[in-house]
Length: 201
Image (cartoon, rainbow, N blue to C red; front, side):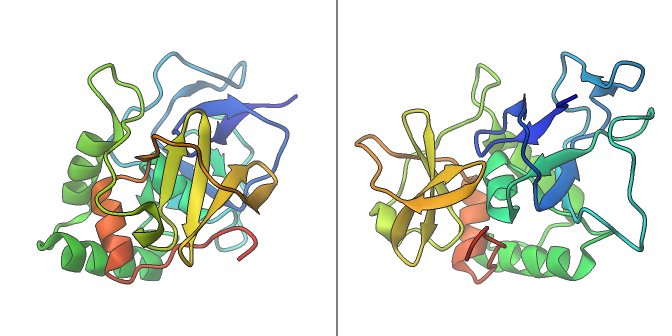
């Protein structure tokens, strides 16, 4: 049974037969009896990125009334969707993200403060994934940022664009009308030096 727990760069939670390299959650958004999603897509503003295994513990996915295990191709995908590193299982990376976020955004915030800012950048007025205007050229975006062109997402790496897919990235040129998918505050953290894990790079 393919579970609906894979997350795209657009923040959509879909059923896809691919393994992710990162895990995360947005609270409890599934029914453990049927292992299916509820109508809501988050129950907390703390959308986090976790490792798939921590201290030898592997969870049975969507099997209990606990947080819903979500999976991402990589950290860049999770950041694009509006998540940030977990302070429990990824403490050092979370602290590095927090420091870069503070430098890039000009203020130091605790995790709940960062979550509040990110939540305001994740969704548009229709409560769908927000797309933001890109300041400057696309190729000037930092490594790990993601953009949208139509229904496709592209990763920026070394000033080049790479088309996202469940299998990884392929060099490709976006069409006109590209918009920023990664929340602007996260992009500023990337500019300040936070380097996310990117599949195949």
